[in-house]
Image (tube, rainbow, N blue to C red; front, side, top):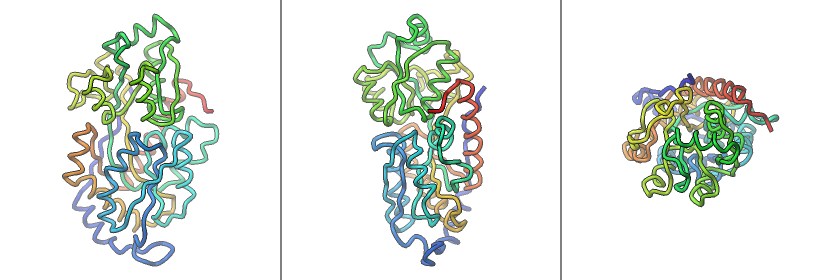
Length: 331
């Protein structure tokens, strides 16, 4: 069985203490107190997707704590690798950060022949932000109401169904391929440039089904625009208790969690890492922001930089093994 993402905990008091100690951490290059100018947060996916939405929720609190604007820059492409590579090559001064995810840091490097990044070598882990199970959703006109129905229909019409995903190098693509393999059917992958256009295609009836995160599924499900067939977590999602897990639906080997966090270029000074970790922790654990996340069906996450680095390492190894298992080929 694939082991799901381990929930992380961290001592808020320790983070607050670290904030006090590092409040005047000097910039590695200028010698000025950090931060002394705006910070760029690169989101390696298009506007409107789940990663972009997460960034925009947290960035205001993050900016307030740092006392400087945090400016989001969307740099999509190649499963998140284009934006990730840009940050890996940036100066390790704390002014260029990456909103990393399971897709860009743990999946995409395995699915492209020249990824140009090594998550363990090119980045300094700073802090996680949130995690979310995935959902399996279908267009309303597809004649299915359960995972069993979907599998039966797909098996009866080999290659006739299609599913959408935000490109080859994404987490949802690899989970969808794993599901196909374990269920024993064939379906055509239709790639899109991001999660938002994939959802648009599903709502328009241009694709049959897709995997998505809970926070983007919920509004569409509540409006009756999609059929939610299952969730990929170990237990049912609190905001969708009527939806069974994939394990309950006969596929206990598929447990998948999307996660998002902040990393910087390798070589980032420890003082700056500590300051950023503390501010992200304070933002994520603030009552108003955590309530927003919980209302969206996602889980706020806290961890030290070393814990986050170990999680990235485990997830990188895990999804590399899945890529080999399903026979996913680099481009």
